[in-house]
Length: 125
Image (cartoon, rainbow, N blue to C red; front, top):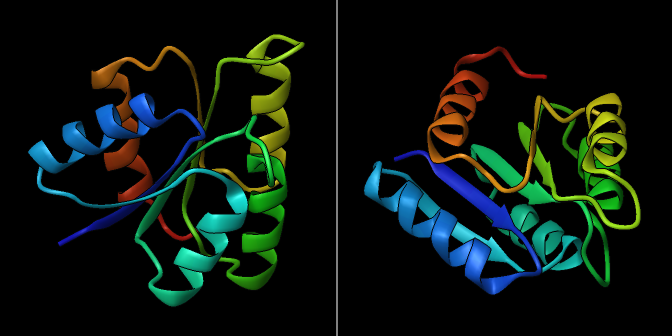
């Protein structure tokens, strides 16, 4: 079964994504921030990471940098609703750092499922 690690500081978003992915046959782990996610990934690497970019403790950008350095083939989908700026700036940064795909929040279910399928089928990034 394909494992996905969802990282978002907003519990309702994690829960919604987890439920959606489990209904489509994925096994899902969750983390509230990048720091927790790195620990979870080191112990039990997922096939795909879906991460928010703006979070407390360790944001998604810092997590992408750390994981790509340690695990260059990790597959990552980054998502953001923006913070002080529009999400495009954060998403462009995530893409440059190695995210295979970026999505602006609010997330469209079909777009997310398509992105997951595409990233999982692509060669390692």
